[in-house]
Amino acid sequence: MKPRSPGRGARRSTGPRRPTGPSRFAGPRRFVGPRRFVGGLRVRLVVTFVLVALLSAVTATALAYRDARTAVLQRTQNTAVDDLRERVAAVAAGFDLPPDQRSLSRFAAEVSEGLGARIVVARHQDLTAVSDAYADTEGRITAELRAAVRAGDGTRFQRVEWRGEPYLVVGTPVTYADGDRRTSGLEVFAITDLRAERDDTEALLDSVREGIVPVVAVAALLALLAAGTVLRPVRKLGRATRELAAGDLGSRVAVRGHDELADLARTFNETAGALQSSDAELRAQEAKARRFVADVSHELRTPLAAMAMVATVLEEDADQLPPDAARAARTVGAETARLSRLVEDLMEISRFDAGAARLNASETDLADTVRASLALRGWTDRVTLDLPEGARAVVDRRRVDVIVANLVGNALRHGAPPVTVTLAVVGAGGGDVPGVGAGGERVVLEVADRGPGLPPEARERVFDRFYKADEARTRTTAATATATATATATGPAATATGPAAPDGGSAPDSGPGPDGGPGPGAGLDGGQGSGLGMAIALENARLHGGTIEVEAQRPGGGAAFTLVLPLRRTDGEGEE
Image: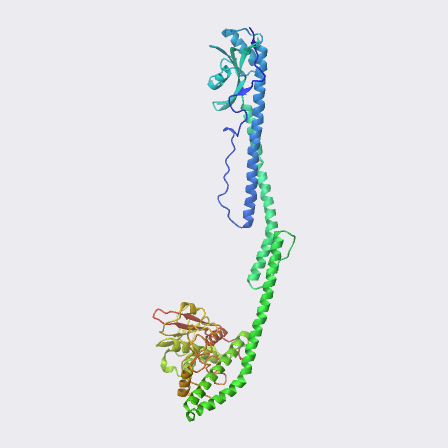
């Protein structure tokens, strides 16, 4: 009985017919991206472009490798299965069963010759014949494949790896030719070397991998171009924003295109325009307010002068009036004097706001100026002085008197004794320098007390206009004003002497003005101040190129105000 060739519809595989991924001998390398992005927006854009391009290239490489490997292996295994089936059918037609060892070996050799000298193994019961007597086939034909072929279910194939090399093993049973499809017991296995296919797929992978470098380079170049296109308007917008923050409200950005950046530039221009309009309106309103204050203060001077003269006459005759009328007369005099000082302070602060204040500077002995300011107000016995001789500087004597009157007056009013006034000349390096110093040196005048000090929230606002550290404080009562006026009234041109204003604002009305009389911001009354004195004092210090520093809570208790002025100043003479 002649054996029948295997059926064409019975091709089966004991392993996967299509590979699901690269094999371990040609797997793609693992990609590890950067752990963090650093640098500016340009760097981040370039890195993002490169990463996307690199990821796309790696993904395309992996997919191309998988598809190419699958196609190559699929073609090879299909060819191997068809060739084995056709060759076995042709040789088995003249093969008699049962065979002996010699006929089985000849059968294996004939099948191998038709398959291009592939290794062929023929098995029949206990007999085994190999087309190549020196070939080791035991490790390449697995027990699983043998069992599947022995079951007679058609042609089977399996890819195996033997000694590090890939092989394709195809097995098929030989059936009888009588039509009943019974297996004859003859089994044929063909072993195909897959190293050529592996080399082909690896060569394809290498070529694709080499193409990643130019792809990434092109992606980086495109990223730089794209970043420049995106960042150029962003840089312009950033420059305009910085100019706007620096005070240039006319800064604008050119709007080009209709994309999101153009919308952003358009919004910025609209915002800057609105801000410029609001600033112009605020400046105009502020100028009107300053002009209004100056005009009102100027217009009030004449009637207030007349009222002051009348009040002085009434105070002189107060002793001849009934008690109630006398108190009323003294109250009117005190309040009229306070209103006059408020008007003078408002006019003085309006000069500072308008930039019209000027220094009438000359070389002055600062120690003598401080002593004269305290003596004018009757404070010499209430203040401890530490005034070294020989400290001379080019200053405006009247304005220094205003500063001293405000600082000392507030210390007497709100602090506790002893109130100390210390004058020193400090060098550029910070050390005390006796006598007159050279360039870089400065004059330091400290007024300190031992009272409760300033609350933390008052430290930053003590120089604000009309600010009062004690919100519960009320204006001077009529009784206090009357008593003060009664005790100190001395003549038509005199005012009450006493401590400075109780607020962080105006203390006594000025020291000597240009004509030797009191000037703005340093009144001589012992009642309530205008609330502008400390603001005027700071403006006077700044006009000299100096400042006033505040120590709200000293270690030993109390507060300290320190006037710091340049030792010499020669610019600007005359004052409005």
